[in-house]
Length: 556
Image (cartoon, rainbow, N blue to C red; front, top):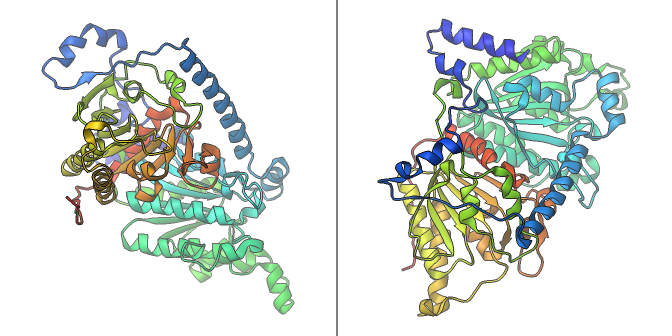
């Protein structure tokens, strides 16, 4: 189905006079590019570097050494836990709920809906926080009851939110509201069109005090829809099930809405409430189905006979948004790193306050393992420099120990350069759980100087208007979490390795605790870091424009 859909899309572009040669040759996200093999590059290494200031990083590690072998074994255990939890998440509300959803209610499962909507059957879908909602005080809510992530529709990156009606009928828990609001925040930061696949029973009433009244509660969803629309960020809804109570406003606040005959309904109160109020028996379809809202109320704009047609209409709507598509530009050419991604698992720390050689980590992530380092001899506990990731030029800021006075000044200087040149910044966090003392040659003025330097680094990161992406690869603790663009400093995306620990000095929490509470945008396996960054950069750069960073008062 998707192959035919993509072919029809390309034919339409050819008919319109577009040059589709590069489109047919390669998809910028998924088709293998023409890259040199490692053996081919090794023959030309000297020539490749001659005349350039950077260097090829040495990523060689001994996997049989005690440290790396122990870390690799620990990483395998974490990966097994990750896969086990993902299997739970994919089952949604369980086998009985899934059977009721598909057999009795005749509806498509939410993850199958995603495949029908996006390009490539969802192969490139970036899911956010799949483990959110696990182990909370009110029990387990798989994926927080709502799937969120970025998928490409006709080459346009879109923020997609899909209710999972197999989990308590798609009702929203507090963690589900928080997850949905984070998705809208990411969409706003990156100007991503939003597509809502709606199948929701509204708020989970036993917890309504944590869902309804506050500025960051359920009502904020509708406020965000209106504000994003005013910012010319398109809002599209596809009604594939119930939209009850507050859920009814998602499609009615959207720019365009599709509804499916027979299963899509929109009303503030369903048939049971009508009967309780006035004693009238009415069907859900008659009360708020596709015919009523397409022919009478006008709450929806497109009538679909079935879900497949609904998602085809959704794709057609995205095709009319008049926004850039990845098919409009040729994909970048780049080299693979010299070292295999699988080895990144051997860098997964087994506890807090463990060092990671970030130069070696970078050698496994950046194009050609080639790094143009900035101020390599000054403030060496913070690595700064430029590299390419899958063809994208980025600035990199990575911990190589505690952030010292000099390291903080160097970091602030580098962030300013990235802002001046409109270059996205990747932060790789592995901070210590306590501030280390300054080296003897940096103790003039000592603590006060260090504090001012770190304040400068914080200020430059906070004010930086270029895209910022953070990956926590080890520890992430108190003030150094802030110095490395933690959650409170608004990175456009924040990922975390499964071995990571976060918190204040003596009370660190593991990655699964963190992600269950949406302290991050999701756990990623170390070996997937480069590919996740590739997709992340495609998202944050797609609609980006030249920016001007303005700073407040920086203490001298």
